[in-house]
Image (cartoon, rainbow, N blue to C red):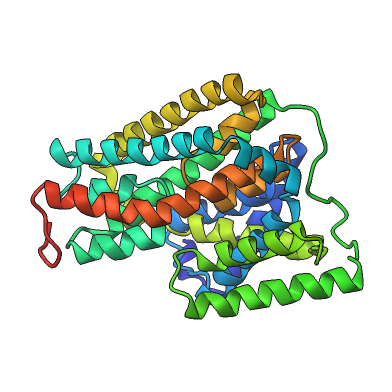
Length: 355
């Protein structure tokens, strides 16, 4: 029904539905409503045959905005705490990466998914890098991309629901005055960081560079007291919606039919990895004294931008969550592809051969 509409009308329908669903989720006080509303709306329309695609430039800009937001809330005190407990933090991050490798190996070993698709799809993060490398090994990139974004969806939903029912007291880091005006100088510094991050991401070959580069540069500059980062709330709103649409529009009826038979196995592997991360999150509460919700959000596998948005709408230790997620993302980008490649080779798969 919706597939017969013009592209313009499909976008208008998506925008209208996103507004309605987001308002409903915010009325229900569900954290991350600004992300989950557009995401859910995009899934509904994509399953109904709507074929929309968010322009890559818009997605890159949205990532840069979220990366800048993350940089604006990471303070020196939190970084000092993470550095002081570096052995624990690194151990927990590597445990997540290793667990995702074990899950991928098991799925490939037991032929749950064809060839190496399970290996690349199970990697906890760096979705774009995994899709590229999966294609190199001849894996079905549709299955890999679907599994990566299915995990993002599951993690985002679970984090929002748990945050709603186990929410801790504290400030909501997201402004609700959508027409608020930032300080002109701070806004200028923020705009330069966002635009600079987008331009750098074009020339620096780093997966998720549009997210990581503004985060790294902005975090250092803010830590040194050189900049004050303030993003207009309406810009954040547009960035969150863009990221939600990118994830949601991946769930087309065609790809759902393709993976229907394997969907229970995918969900089981994702839930197993999430349960493992929740378990090490519980241990983290005992070792570092953080609350369980903060630990759960910090250790959640994948979707650093999604977790950042959800965490920002709760009263958790946002700096701790983002520091942990950032470190995991960087380690996954560096170690994840190497680990997945070695597992694939160990399973007898080589680049260039269909698997």
